Each structure stands twice: as C-alpha cells, then as structure tokens.
Amino acid sequence: MYKEVEVKLSPDHINDPASLERVIAKTAKLQRPFSHRVLRKSIDARGRTAVYRLRVGVAKDEELPKPPPYRKSYSTGKGRPEVYIVGAGPAGYFAALECLEQGLRPIVLDRGKDVRARRRDLKAIQQDGVVNPHSNYCFGEGGAGTYSDGKLYTRAHKRGSIRKVLHVLVEHGAQEDILQDAHPHIGSNKLPHIIAAMRSTIEACGGEVRFDQHVTDISAEKGRVAGLTLANGETLEVQYLILATGHSARDIYELFSRKQWTLEAKPFALGVRIEHPQVLIDHQQYGSNPRHENLPAASYSLATQVEDTGVFSFCMCPGGLIVPASTAPGELVVNGMSLSRRDSPYANSGFVTEVDEEDWAEFAGQGALAGLAYQKAAEKKIFEAGDGSQKAPAQLIEDFIAGRLSSKLNPTSYIPGVYSAPMHELLPAPVAARLRQGLKQLTKKIKGYTSNAGQVVGIESRTSSPVRIPRDKESLQHQDVAGLYPCGEGAGFAGGILSAAMDGQKVAMKIAEFIKVDS
Image 1 (cartoon, rainbow, N blue to C red):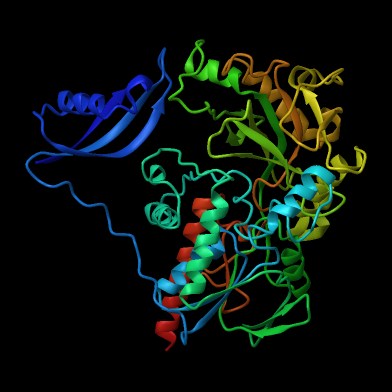
Image 2: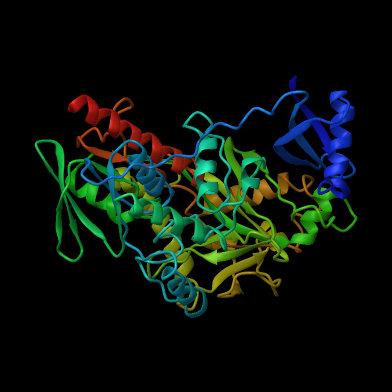
C-alpha cells in the first residue's frame, strides 16, 4: 500500500526523524514500520507561529516508488552535428547538455570569463567602481544568476520539466534539498562550483566552451544563418545557432536592428532595491519572538495596482546583499543576491512597477529599441547624479513617500556605499509616483515595511529584457533567419534560472528534431 499525506511539524521537530515518523503514523493511520520519503517541503507562516508543511510518500508492506530516473549518460558529441551556442548562462549551458543528450555537439561561446576568473572583475566593481563590459554580475560563465542569488523558482510550469532541471543541478553538485523545497535556493557561494561542473561535463563529452569570445556579427545567406564574427576578427561557419545572450546584451539587439531583422519592444519593470533589517521581516512574518534557529530568514512577496499598473516586489533576497549590476561605464544598476546560508542582517528586494510604451513614448522614434533607450537613460541619470563611482543614491522610505531628502541613511549591505539623494526626482516621474503610491497602499501588509527602518536604493532596471527577439512558435527559429534560435531571457522567453534552463532544453530538442527531419 502506498499513499501520499500532508503533515505539519513545528520548527522544533523538523530535524527529528522520530517526530516526523510519529506524525506520519498518526496522519496516515498506519502502524510502524513503514517507509517514507519527503516529496515537498514548505513553510506556512499564516498562523500565530510558523510551521513546516510536508508532503510525504508512505509505503506499507511494499517498496517506495522510485523517483523518475532523470540522470542521463550524455553521449559523446564528437563527429556529431555542431550547434553553436552564444552565451554560457543557464539557457546556454542547459541547451548544451540537452544537445549532448540528443546526440549533437555543442560549442558554447561566451564574451566573459570562466566562473573563477570572473570573481576578480566582481571585486573590481565592488571595491573600485571599475566596470568590465564583458565580465561583471551579468556577463560571464553562469550568467546573471551565478553571482546574483541562484533562486530556483518559476511559475512557468508548462515550459518544460522543472524536475529535470533540478536533477541536472543535483547531479552537478547541488544539495538534494532543492528537489523538495517549495522555493529552492542554492546561493551565490555554491553555484560557481556547480556551473564549473556542468562545463566539465560538456567538455568531457566532446563539446566545447570558449571564453573571451565576444560575438560582434551574425551573417546570413539566403535567409539562413551562415556564420559568426568575433571581436578578435575570427570568423566561424555556423549552421545552427542558439542565441542565449541574456537580458543585458544590448549590442545584440542593436546588431539585429542594423540588419533590420525583426525585433519587438517588450514591457518590463523598473524601480529600486528596497532594504530592511532582516529582523524586521522575520518578526512580521514569523511572529514577535526571535526567529527559530530551524527557520530560514523570512521572505515576502508584495503586489498592488496603481492606476491599473502593477507595483510589486521582485527577486526578494532574505539575509542578502545589494550588489552593483552595471554592465558598462557611465551607468548605475543594482541587483540583489544571497549566499546559501542567507545570514546577512539585511533583507532586500526589488520594488518595481511595470513600464510600457506609454512610459517610453519620448523614445518611440527608436522603434523596437524604444524601451531599451528608456532603460539606458534612466540608468545614466542615476549614474550622473553621483560622483562617477558605483556608489548608489538612497533615501529612507518615509522620506521617499513624502518627497523629501533624507538627512541620514541606514547601514547597508551595498559594498560600494550609498549617499542621500532625492530618489523621487531621480527616477522617471511616473515610475516614482507609482512606487510611492504603491508603498502607501502596502503600509498594512507588513508592519514597519514603509517606515524609515528601511530605505530605497537605485536603480533596479534589469528585471527582464526590454526587447523580444521573436521566433516561430513551431520551429522556434527566428522568423527572418532560419537556423537561428533566440533563447532564454535575452530573447524575451524566460525570466530566471529555471525558465531560462527549460527554454534552453526546449530549443536544443527542437534543433535535434529538425536535424532528424532534415537528414
């Protein structure tokens, strides 16, 4: 007999196997012995005290069903059809692994550095304000997610197999907890090792990963992709190209625009990072007592509507840090991250509002790049308000709402530092107005959230791509260039590690299907 049951445990007992077994026996009405496996784990903080809720598979007088066998023996890519992949982020690497599964040979090109060498450039931007346009928090092996949190959550359950993506991560070094947690998280201190292990698999099976390979041109002949040109002058013949360049590869959008290949402006979100003491969030989410040692740093998700436009928290980082996410000199962008233990004394989240063609109307003459121009202008204005470093403007929340300059600021996790500035004036006026009104409406959601215990830091502008590179729904190829497959966040078809990874797998499978038909 096998059944699945829902049980709950207090934080006191979550790590006690005997307590879990007693609760299962009572809930399932079974006499011991029996076997069990935790399938899903989440925290329910809706009551007076937080509890863990677990979905458990229980078997009596039979073996537990085995989990789906996702582990793959990747075949060698040597001598197989070659697929070039531009971008070594989650879309690119998961596409490469899927290529190996499908009997194809992936060749991954990334403009940045390997995950280890990339750290030096992150240190340079954090401590010296020096931005390397090819190696930063957005560009380099692993993409933006590697050093900016590694949260594994998506609502895109129809895009592919989330379970398969999680299993691939576990196979390459992630803890098995991510297979159970409702909101799995790896952490920016552990992801680099996993990313490096994925590269090792690709290379061991005959694929290639090349760094410092900045693609400056894509050529096509008779409507089909034909080659790539690199910044070093090298040219490559290409038949199948997966474009997985991420949401900040603006030069790719500009290249498409010059070639008059179809692009579309896409709504995105823009705003600030909002930072509080983690203890404030813990008290409001878990109760007034100090957080239990077996509970993680508390998170939150907030949303409201202002003038029929969404205002919401985004990429919440409990026990996290604010980091500089600029990808070029002359701009200032911030993002958030957490290490695996989430033990920073600060909580931060994006607090953003949707922006669309009404917001970027002044840039309408730039066609599909209008939203991108608006995004660039906002980042430039924030940078020019400062001293030329990556020091960020900030404002206490009550002062932001009231429209007054803060006389002092709170301590911050942002290493380059913050300075007092009128964020209500530096942000685009409609954006500032919606954020301020949104905060007023959310005052009662988390007590103290809109007090001066917190502050806003700007600008959070890389929430997603402001441009979509459209593709045919059936073939997944770009509608103007056969053999070119736009993929992941940079193409506007994903929003985070999981959805980007699934999109990479999806595109690789489609290429394999096409090659078999074509052959």
